[in-house]
Image (cartoon, rainbow, N blue to C red; front, side, top):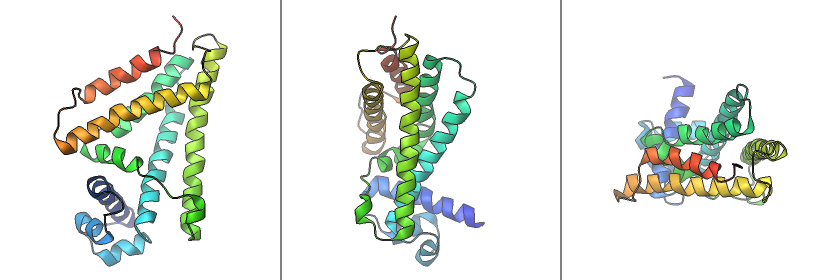
Length: 207
């Protein structure tokens, strides 16, 4: 098994354990056991739980920013662009059981910079901030472009529209995670999320 494969197994295992138990109550031993490797080997790849959590979040943000770059190269108008960005969230978070776990992990609160003493982890946290800003900038630029072209409603600022869309869609997707792990019926299914994304975006498109 290659180094990259082992790291991926640890990250996948931690995503599941963090989702089921919460970051606070998960242990490195549980993560290692779930990954099918020794605890000692896990520490050879990651310093601690926080290192793993930061790696998961950073990996997601880097992945979605890459997908956005790829999709936006072929998109020609603001509506097509904003659909592409939000459907990337859908594609990455609603693909299977593993990605449903990722939804929960991404909702974990990350420590503030001043609370991180380790230089490597501080750098990783700074990279998360950088990637998150890149994601936000991508969405705000698309909305701004749409408003300038008269496609999107100008009543609200681009940042407010972005927050409304992201917040609403996040809760819809989080409900699917809750339903899967609690086995409770929340009244909608995975396929409804995609429809909800387009309906929400359409609220800000001028007819």
